[in-house]
Length: 294
Ligand SMILES: Nc1ncnc2c1ncn2[C@@H]1O[C@H](COP(=O)(O)OP(=O)(O)O)[C@@H](O)[C@H]1O
Ligand SMILES: N[C@@H](CCOP(=O)(O)O)C(=O)O
Image (cartoon, rainbow, N blue to C red; front, side):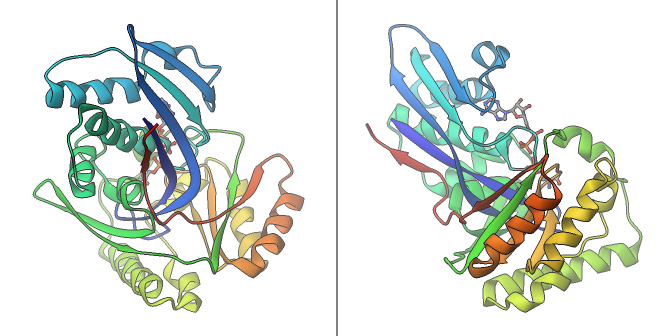
Protein backbone atom coordinates (compact mmCIF):
# COMPACT_ATOMS: atom_id res chain seq x y z
CA UNK A 1 0.00 0.00 0.00
CA UNK A 2 0.95 3.64 -0.41
CA UNK A 3 -0.16 6.53 1.79
CA UNK A 4 0.29 10.26 1.20
CA UNK A 5 -0.07 12.77 4.01
CA UNK A 6 -0.24 16.55 3.62
CA UNK A 7 1.86 19.21 5.31
CA UNK A 8 -0.09 21.52 7.63
CA UNK A 9 0.19 25.04 8.93
CA UNK A 10 -0.97 25.39 12.54
CA UNK A 11 -2.13 28.30 14.72
CA UNK A 12 -2.80 30.69 11.78
CA UNK A 13 -1.87 33.51 14.17
CA UNK A 14 -4.23 33.61 17.15
CA UNK A 15 -5.54 30.01 16.98
CA UNK A 16 -2.77 28.59 19.15
CA UNK A 17 -3.09 24.80 19.45
CA UNK A 18 -6.55 24.74 17.79
CA UNK A 19 -6.65 26.15 14.21
CA UNK A 20 -4.81 24.76 11.18
CA UNK A 21 -5.03 23.98 7.50
CA UNK A 22 -3.63 21.43 5.07
CA UNK A 23 -1.24 22.22 2.24
CA UNK A 24 -0.68 20.27 -0.98
CA UNK A 25 2.86 19.22 -0.08
CA UNK A 26 3.04 15.53 0.73
CA UNK A 27 5.10 12.83 2.34
CA UNK A 28 4.52 9.45 0.72
CA UNK A 29 5.18 6.08 2.30
CA UNK A 30 5.05 2.66 0.59
CA UNK A 31 4.68 -0.33 2.89
CA UNK A 32 5.16 -3.85 1.55
CA UNK A 33 5.14 -7.28 3.22
CA UNK A 34 8.70 -8.60 3.37
CA UNK A 35 10.69 -11.49 4.83
CA UNK A 36 12.61 -8.97 7.01
CA UNK A 37 12.05 -5.38 8.18
CA UNK A 38 13.83 -2.65 6.18
CA UNK A 39 13.65 1.11 5.69
CA UNK A 40 14.67 3.41 2.84
CA UNK A 41 14.41 7.21 2.94
CA UNK A 42 14.40 9.60 -0.03
CA UNK A 43 14.00 13.38 0.08
CA UNK A 44 13.93 15.24 3.41
CA UNK A 45 16.02 13.44 6.03
CA UNK A 46 17.68 11.02 3.58
CA UNK A 47 21.12 12.00 4.86
CA UNK A 48 20.08 11.24 8.46
CA UNK A 49 21.23 7.69 9.25
CA UNK A 50 19.12 7.65 12.47
CA UNK A 51 15.91 7.62 10.40
CA UNK A 52 16.81 4.14 9.18
CA UNK A 53 17.33 2.78 12.71
CA UNK A 54 15.11 4.80 15.02
CA UNK A 55 12.18 5.89 12.92
CA UNK A 56 9.13 7.30 14.75
CA UNK A 57 6.84 6.38 11.85
CA UNK A 58 7.90 2.74 12.15
CA UNK A 59 7.60 2.64 15.95
CA UNK A 60 4.11 4.21 15.95
CA UNK A 61 3.09 1.91 13.06
CA UNK A 62 4.08 -1.18 15.08
CA UNK A 63 2.42 0.13 18.29
CA UNK A 64 -0.88 0.21 16.43
CA UNK A 65 -0.31 -2.79 14.13
CA UNK A 66 0.52 -5.08 17.06
CA UNK A 67 -2.51 -3.83 18.97
CA UNK A 68 -4.75 -4.63 15.99
CA UNK A 69 -3.11 -7.73 14.50
CA UNK A 70 -1.70 -9.17 17.72
CA UNK A 71 1.69 -9.85 16.03
CA UNK A 72 4.67 -7.98 14.57
CA UNK A 73 5.03 -8.93 10.90
CA UNK A 74 8.09 -7.68 8.99
CA UNK A 75 7.53 -4.96 6.37
CA UNK A 76 9.59 -2.87 4.00
CA UNK A 77 9.01 0.88 4.55
CA UNK A 78 9.91 3.26 1.70
CA UNK A 79 9.71 6.93 2.64
CA UNK A 80 9.52 9.76 0.10
CA UNK A 81 9.62 12.86 2.27
CA UNK A 82 8.76 16.28 0.85
CA UNK A 83 7.81 17.98 4.14
CA UNK A 84 10.88 19.66 5.64
CA UNK A 85 11.64 18.77 9.28
CA UNK A 86 11.19 21.31 12.09
CA UNK A 87 10.07 24.16 9.84
CA UNK A 88 6.53 24.51 11.24
CA UNK A 89 4.98 22.50 8.42
CA UNK A 90 3.65 19.67 10.57
CA UNK A 91 6.21 17.02 9.62
CA UNK A 92 5.75 15.24 12.96
CA UNK A 93 1.94 15.18 12.63
CA UNK A 94 2.25 13.82 9.10
CA UNK A 95 4.37 11.00 10.51
CA UNK A 96 1.91 10.26 13.33
CA UNK A 97 -1.21 10.35 11.14
CA UNK A 98 0.49 8.39 8.35
CA UNK A 99 1.75 5.69 10.72
CA UNK A 100 -1.62 5.18 12.41
CA UNK A 101 -3.70 5.20 9.21
CA UNK A 102 -1.35 2.77 7.45
CA UNK A 103 -1.23 0.41 10.46
CA UNK A 104 -5.04 0.11 10.31
CA UNK A 105 -4.85 -0.48 6.55
CA UNK A 106 -2.09 -3.12 6.77
CA UNK A 107 -3.90 -4.90 9.64
CA UNK A 108 -7.04 -4.99 7.49
CA UNK A 109 -9.10 -3.10 10.10
CA UNK A 110 -11.47 -0.43 8.81
CA UNK A 111 -11.26 2.85 10.76
CA UNK A 112 -13.03 6.17 10.39
CA UNK A 113 -11.03 9.37 10.11
CA UNK A 114 -12.31 10.26 13.62
CA UNK A 115 -10.71 7.06 14.95
CA UNK A 116 -7.36 7.96 13.34
CA UNK A 117 -7.62 11.50 14.74
CA UNK A 118 -8.33 10.27 18.26
CA UNK A 119 -5.41 7.83 18.17
CA UNK A 120 -3.14 10.57 16.82
CA UNK A 121 -3.95 12.94 19.68
CA UNK A 122 -2.37 10.41 22.05
CA UNK A 123 0.98 11.07 20.33
CA UNK A 124 0.70 14.86 19.84
CA UNK A 125 -1.49 16.58 22.39
CA UNK A 126 -2.62 19.56 20.28
CA UNK A 127 -4.97 18.95 17.32
CA UNK A 128 -4.07 21.96 15.15
CA UNK A 129 -1.77 19.97 12.82
CA UNK A 130 -3.29 16.54 13.28
CA UNK A 131 -6.87 17.51 12.36
CA UNK A 132 -6.01 19.05 8.95
CA UNK A 133 -3.58 16.18 8.21
CA UNK A 134 -6.53 13.82 8.77
CA UNK A 135 -9.36 15.77 7.11
CA UNK A 136 -7.68 18.36 4.85
CA UNK A 137 -9.05 21.90 4.53
CA UNK A 138 -9.20 24.42 7.36
CA UNK A 139 -10.00 22.85 10.72
CA UNK A 140 -11.09 24.26 14.05
CA UNK A 141 -10.69 21.77 16.89
CA UNK A 142 -11.08 21.30 20.62
CA UNK A 143 -10.03 18.43 22.87
CA UNK A 144 -12.75 17.53 25.37
CA UNK A 145 -12.12 14.71 27.86
CA UNK A 146 -9.33 13.39 25.65
CA UNK A 147 -11.45 13.36 22.47
CA UNK A 148 -11.03 15.74 19.54
CA UNK A 149 -14.05 17.56 18.07
CA UNK A 150 -13.29 19.17 14.71
CA UNK A 151 -15.19 21.16 12.13
CA UNK A 152 -13.72 21.43 8.63
CA UNK A 153 -14.12 24.02 5.90
CA UNK A 154 -13.10 23.19 2.33
CA UNK A 155 -11.00 26.02 0.94
CA UNK A 156 -11.44 26.32 -2.82
CA UNK A 157 -9.11 27.02 -5.71
CA UNK A 158 -9.40 30.79 -5.34
CA UNK A 159 -6.82 30.70 -2.55
CA UNK A 160 -3.15 29.70 -2.60
CA UNK A 161 -0.34 29.62 -0.11
CA UNK A 162 3.00 31.38 -0.50
CA UNK A 163 5.27 29.66 1.98
CA UNK A 164 8.63 31.07 3.03
CA UNK A 165 10.81 28.20 4.29
CA UNK A 166 13.99 29.35 6.04
CA UNK A 167 17.22 27.41 5.88
CA UNK A 168 17.29 27.00 9.69
CA UNK A 169 15.02 24.68 11.71
CA UNK A 170 13.08 25.55 14.90
CA UNK A 171 12.12 22.51 16.93
CA UNK A 172 8.55 22.64 18.21
CA UNK A 173 9.56 21.34 21.64
CA UNK A 174 12.16 24.10 22.04
CA UNK A 175 9.88 26.75 20.57
CA UNK A 176 7.19 25.92 23.17
CA UNK A 177 9.66 26.51 26.02
CA UNK A 178 9.90 30.16 24.90
CA UNK A 179 6.28 30.76 25.89
CA UNK A 180 4.97 31.85 29.30
CA UNK A 181 2.80 29.56 31.40
CA UNK A 182 0.04 32.17 31.82
CA UNK A 183 -1.15 35.33 30.06
CA UNK A 184 -2.86 38.54 31.20
CA UNK A 185 -6.62 38.72 30.55
CA UNK A 186 -6.21 41.41 27.85
CA UNK A 187 -3.93 39.12 25.80
CA UNK A 188 -6.36 36.24 26.18
CA UNK A 189 -9.24 38.42 24.95
CA UNK A 190 -7.07 39.72 22.07
CA UNK A 191 -6.43 36.19 20.79
CA UNK A 192 -9.84 34.76 21.62
CA UNK A 193 -11.65 37.49 19.69
CA UNK A 194 -9.35 37.18 16.68
CA UNK A 195 -9.37 33.36 16.57
CA UNK A 196 -13.19 33.50 16.61
CA UNK A 197 -13.31 36.13 13.86
CA UNK A 198 -10.69 34.24 11.82
CA UNK A 199 -12.75 31.04 11.98
CA UNK A 200 -15.94 32.89 11.05
CA UNK A 201 -14.14 34.71 8.19
CA UNK A 202 -12.75 31.47 6.74
CA UNK A 203 -16.05 29.62 7.05
CA UNK A 204 -18.00 32.49 5.49
CA UNK A 205 -15.27 33.32 2.91
CA UNK A 206 -14.99 36.93 4.05
CA UNK A 207 -11.35 37.20 3.05
CA UNK A 208 -11.10 40.93 3.84
CA UNK A 209 -11.39 40.12 7.58
CA UNK A 210 -8.36 37.82 7.57
CA UNK A 211 -5.70 40.47 8.02
CA UNK A 212 -7.06 41.85 11.29
CA UNK A 213 -8.34 38.47 12.47
CA UNK A 214 -4.95 36.74 12.07
CA UNK A 215 -3.05 38.90 14.56
CA UNK A 216 -1.65 37.16 17.63
CA UNK A 217 -0.13 38.33 20.90
CA UNK A 218 0.57 34.98 22.57
CA UNK A 219 3.38 33.22 20.73
CA UNK A 220 4.54 34.69 17.42
CA UNK A 221 6.63 37.62 18.65
CA UNK A 222 8.63 35.56 21.15
CA UNK A 223 9.32 32.90 18.54
CA UNK A 224 10.07 35.28 15.65
CA UNK A 225 12.71 37.02 17.78
CA UNK A 226 14.79 33.85 17.23
CA UNK A 227 14.92 34.69 13.51
CA UNK A 228 14.45 38.44 13.11
CA UNK A 229 14.14 38.32 9.28
CA UNK A 230 10.65 36.91 9.82
CA UNK A 231 9.31 40.35 10.82
CA UNK A 232 10.33 41.64 7.39
CA UNK A 233 8.85 38.57 5.67
CA UNK A 234 5.46 39.51 7.11
CA UNK A 235 5.83 43.19 6.22
CA UNK A 236 6.69 42.43 2.59
CA UNK A 237 4.00 39.76 2.22
CA UNK A 238 1.23 42.02 3.53
CA UNK A 239 2.50 45.00 1.50
CA UNK A 240 2.44 42.81 -1.65
CA UNK A 241 -1.19 41.83 -1.07
CA UNK A 242 -1.21 38.69 1.12
CA UNK A 243 -4.58 38.22 2.86
CA UNK A 244 -2.82 37.09 6.04
CA UNK A 245 0.76 36.35 7.03
CA UNK A 246 1.48 34.20 10.10
CA UNK A 247 4.24 32.14 11.63
CA UNK A 248 3.60 28.59 10.42
CA UNK A 249 3.14 26.40 13.50
CA UNK A 250 6.04 27.03 15.82
CA UNK A 251 8.24 28.21 12.93
CA UNK A 252 10.52 28.69 11.22
CA UNK A 253 8.39 28.90 8.04
CA UNK A 254 6.07 31.79 7.32
CA UNK A 255 2.60 31.12 5.95
CA UNK A 256 1.00 33.63 3.58
CA UNK A 257 -2.54 33.09 2.35
CA UNK A 258 -3.18 34.84 -0.96
CA UNK A 259 -5.85 35.14 -3.63
CA UNK A 260 -4.71 32.86 -6.49
CA UNK A 261 -4.27 35.82 -8.85
CA UNK A 262 -1.82 37.49 -6.41
CA UNK A 263 0.32 34.44 -5.66
CA UNK A 264 3.08 35.19 -8.14
CA UNK A 265 3.35 38.84 -7.12
CA UNK A 266 3.68 37.99 -3.42
CA UNK A 267 6.11 35.11 -4.11
CA UNK A 268 8.29 37.27 -6.36
CA UNK A 269 8.50 40.09 -3.80
CA UNK A 270 9.51 37.58 -1.11
CA UNK A 271 12.02 35.79 -3.37
CA UNK A 272 13.65 39.09 -4.28
CA UNK A 273 14.03 40.04 -0.62
CA UNK A 274 14.99 36.61 0.77
CA UNK A 275 17.18 34.87 -1.80
CA UNK A 276 18.53 32.59 0.94
CA UNK A 277 15.09 31.16 1.85
CA UNK A 278 12.86 28.81 -0.16
CA UNK A 279 9.75 30.61 -1.34
CA UNK A 280 7.09 28.34 -2.82
CA UNK A 281 3.54 28.58 -4.01
CA UNK A 282 1.30 25.69 -2.89
CA UNK A 283 -2.32 24.74 -3.43
CA UNK A 284 -4.40 23.93 -0.37
CA UNK A 285 -5.24 20.29 0.34
CA UNK A 286 -8.87 19.44 1.04
CA UNK A 287 -8.65 15.65 1.43
CA UNK A 288 -6.23 14.92 4.26
CA UNK A 289 -4.28 11.66 4.14
CA UNK A 290 -5.04 9.36 1.22
CA UNK A 291 -4.39 5.64 0.94
CA UNK A 292 -3.61 4.26 -2.48
CA UNK A 293 -3.67 0.46 -2.63
CA UNK A 294 -0.99 -1.02 -4.87
N1 LIG B 1 9.47 11.98 7.66
C1 LIG B 1 9.89 11.78 8.90
N2 LIG B 1 10.36 10.58 9.28
C2 LIG B 1 10.77 10.37 10.55
N3 LIG B 1 10.76 11.32 11.52
C3 LIG B 1 10.31 12.52 11.18
C4 LIG B 1 9.85 12.82 9.86
N4 LIG B 1 9.44 14.11 9.84
C5 LIG B 1 9.64 14.59 11.08
N5 LIG B 1 10.15 13.65 11.89
C6 LIG B 1 10.48 13.82 13.31
O1 LIG B 1 9.80 14.96 13.80
C7 LIG B 1 10.74 15.97 14.22
C8 LIG B 1 10.25 17.33 13.82
O2 LIG B 1 9.11 17.63 14.55
P1 LIG B 1 8.81 19.11 15.04
O3 LIG B 1 9.99 19.69 15.74
O4 LIG B 1 7.51 19.04 15.77
O5 LIG B 1 8.67 19.94 13.71
P2 LIG B 1 7.53 20.08 12.62
O6 LIG B 1 7.13 21.51 12.72
O7 LIG B 1 8.18 19.78 11.32
O8 LIG B 1 6.43 19.13 12.98
C9 LIG B 1 12.04 15.59 13.52
O9 LIG B 1 13.17 16.03 14.24
C10 LIG B 1 11.96 14.07 13.49
O10 LIG B 1 12.32 13.54 14.74
N1 LIG C 1 0.38 24.81 18.19
C1 LIG C 1 1.70 24.25 18.02
C2 LIG C 1 1.90 23.96 16.55
C3 LIG C 1 3.23 23.34 16.22
O1 LIG C 1 3.29 23.14 14.82
P1 LIG C 1 4.62 22.60 14.13
O2 LIG C 1 4.26 22.44 12.68
O3 LIG C 1 5.67 23.62 14.36
O4 LIG C 1 4.94 21.28 14.79
C4 LIG C 1 2.72 25.26 18.52
O5 LIG C 1 2.58 26.42 18.15
O6 LIG C 1 3.61 24.88 19.29
